[in-house]
Length: 310
Image 1: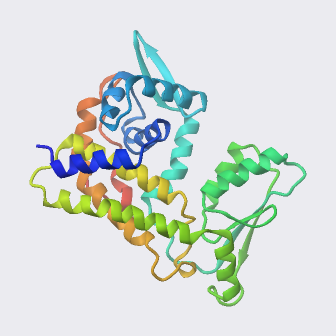
Image 2: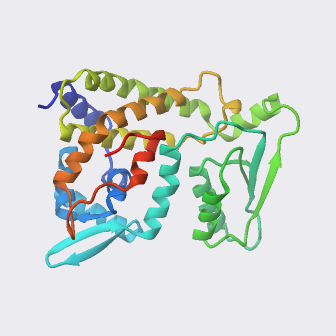
Image 3: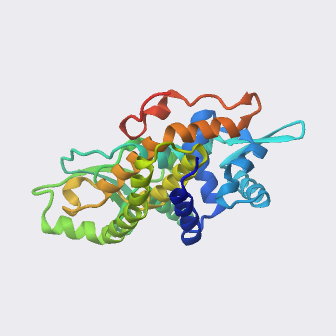
């Protein structure tokens, strides 16, 4: 039985926070379809997202655009079209969702990763593309042609550089704080490079919007599978948009009342609460070229530090 409170919450969310079809489709593919093999029949996908206000025509237009942009690829069997992630699409999802599902590194010893892009081997367009992609990985520009992050992993950085074909045109350096990690000049550098105040406001808005929903779902005797799917979709869509603006700096460089920690915990609580019924809904609606949607891969259950097993 559907909860009237949850139905109203979903309607209010979609009215107040209209979602772009392309972005929402990316959320659904990355969060839900990727662990189940990554490819589904387009007709079943249309049925899945219809309650989110995305009609048949809009879905078809969006998947066509995502295919042109290298996110999705299609396979036609008879009169049916099946859309799945390209290898490049999977790589992009892995970059984004690694930051979403796994807690950032807590222990920091003052190490920094620096990327120098001022080489004459790079065109202006290449430098700008690298800057944009590293910005989404949380890097800040500390000087012209110099990007830095205090706790980034080297693997995503190398993947970005290689996928853009610029690995031989940049210089990567490791640096280390001398003296206090939290000195006044270091904190001023952080304030100049990253707009943490804006990110903090985003986290607080996220928590204010989703906290009443967690209370309602916890008090419900039975959870409706479709509502759980809709809640999980909007939850991850909103958390993704919020988190990807967060550079995920070490705790020593963050304000003492940083709201990102409580927002992540709220997201995890809602995800764990809805995941079983949301998965049941996916399995009942989506179809693949082989028939029924396969069970989720084991890595799915490692999200957020472990969300239980099937």
